Length: 152
Image (cartoon, rainbow, N blue to C red; front, top):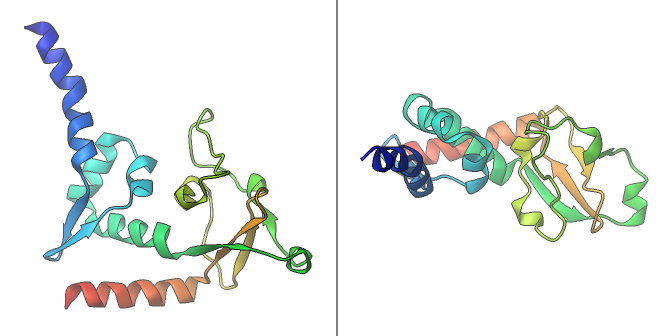
């Protein structure tokens, strides 16, 4: 019996967390991007889902729309940019942040990237890929339009 209780305590959060694919946001079902879910512990994610759905909606939109990944020419590389390895990480030390070959899984939440008044260019340092981060104004305007559509 005790073994069953232990298994339930371990397995139930994993099963439930795996099934959390969406949240209800003002009556609309919002699918949560896996990059948002994997950024948090199961417990904290569940707390956010109940207590701060607005934050999850914001971060969900952020991981999908705050940046685009592009190939840049050699000339463009001469412009002002920062290397991804120079940006502080917001993950455990042993967490792998190697996205080579899996660029679509890039998780902006794992880095201390803040939206600014100007476009930011970040070198991923492999596959000749760069991340173009939108300006704060462009992103917030886009997010506010998105929220307005969700509420109508």
